[in-house]
Amino acid sequence: MHTGLLLPQVRFLACAIIFGVAFVPRISFAATSLSASPTSFNFGSKPVNSGYYFNETLTNRGTTTVMITQATMTSSFKTDGLTLPVTLTPGKSVTFRIKFVPKAAGNFSGSLKVVSNAPTLNIVLTGTGLAAGTLSVSPTSFSFGNVTVGSSATKTATLKANSSSVYIPAATTTNSEFTLSGFNLPLTLSAGQSVSMTVRFAPKSSGSASATISLANTKGPTIASASGNGISTTQHKVGLNWSPSKSTVSGYNVYRGTASGGPYSKLNSQSLVSTSYTDSSVASGKTYFYVTTAVTSSGVESVKSNEVRATIPTP
Image (cartoon, rainbow, N blue to C red; front, side, top):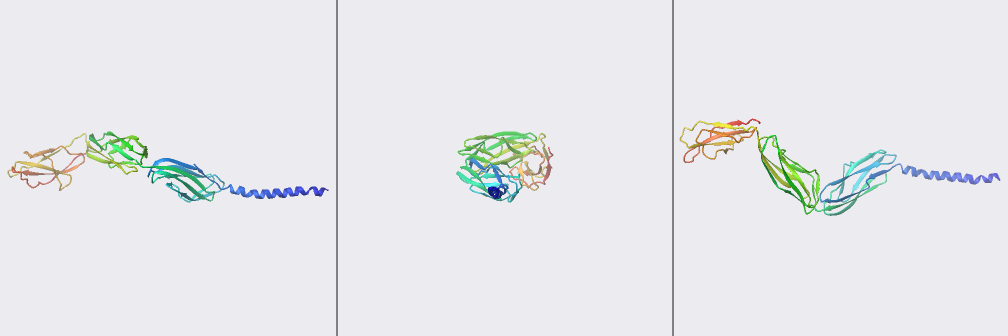
């Protein structure tokens, strides 16, 4: 009688052992885990050929090392800053950028597929490409006139997006004496939107200066120009004297060049009757070369004299 009662207990114990063995694979499966944050991106509406991005972070949430071997992108999306393969120990993360660069107007959808020894991740991506608008700048040229060396002057322009949005990634000038401010780059202007731009001229030396302003955008660079003249607080002069001609002449001409041997430009508008001349249009730090000629009453001009050199101090 007692022996028969023990049989159900033996069977129950055997069943519990079988149940425990079946549960082991579930514990092993949970050890490798990779998560994405965020799990989807909506870039919204962006101009064609723009380069907007979001940060994406992949984190090892498991208890064993994760090896990421592939990151496959589709449509007008691409990754930036992710170098594969990537090894993540438990708790570690990697952050990179996902860019949306639409090549045409319209709606785009895609995904980023992340392949590793953990379950594959699919990050959903969407965005809309807008036809690129035209960027205008007003005025298109800036004349600063005379500005004293060591000081500065500013002028204001207006940038406007016509017909559709415009993406401006960069703005440059070809001369460091001219700088731009008033807005932060990269910048997107929606259709009809405008922003002020400040152009500053700060001459570092006396003399004329000019620059080309280039505003990069999806339709190609928009160009403006700027010019000004730096003047020194100390105005230098060059005094010239020469011996009179031994021939009968009615006057003299004075020529100046910036290189030895010329070419030369005539400084006086009419023949000089004296044998001296003062050049008041020199710039600090420059070197000039001078020659003279004699002119007869009939307008015949002699050959050029010997050359003299004058170096202007700074300032």
